Image 1: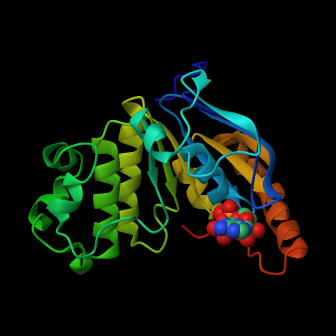
Image 2: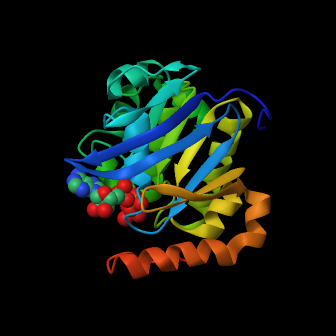
Length: 246
Ligand SMILES: Nc1ncnc2c1ncn2[C@@H]1O[C@H](COP(=O)(O)OP(=O)(O)OP(=O)(O)O)[C@@H](O)[C@H]1O
């Protein structure tokens, strides 16, 4: 359960991050507290993945800072992971030619720790990951990340394209992690799913957070959220509106 009033585990303060000279994030600040699930929403190109890349240490900010447990976070993906920041990328980062067991061994936790979190993987342990379904691969990815006992989990589009039963299983696992005190930050393009999962929601538009509040508050601000997606789409012909479907 969210530890209301707790200090953030992971916090971005005034982040300016970009590729080359052009900043994509323009002074973005966001915080994740122990036991809460925060969803980053926004149209295509709003800067959601870039935010996760900066928080996980893949991208170095032009200015601003990332703080972990109230102190400057160590630089770089591996050092930040050692300090307790787990990242699940959109591509799942599994090795298709290795078995489920071998993939789990590559994580920071062990195979048994992963199975304790996701017992459904047990009958699949000796199967090549390339032969597992997308949902099974994502269960592996989530179990492997959580088995390492991270302080914070960052996950990009965890449930994209998966069947409803698998989605429900993954969300149950995320909530259980939060209940154990893990801070969770997910990138989610679909508004309804974000409201279903998260305690708190931040809507990004062109690298800035334009709407922020509890999921309960956001239920009455759907029109405002939709307008922010629509204005992003109007600004950038390539941008699309995240569906309201779950
Ligand atoms: N490697 C890169 N090099 C240059 N520009 C990039 C790179 N990655 C992302 N961008 C640009 O940064 C902006 C934000 O991209 P980002 O992927 O963070 O958005 P997003 O909100 O996650 O979008 P999506 O929902 O489509 O994944 C976009 O304009 C994108 O084109």
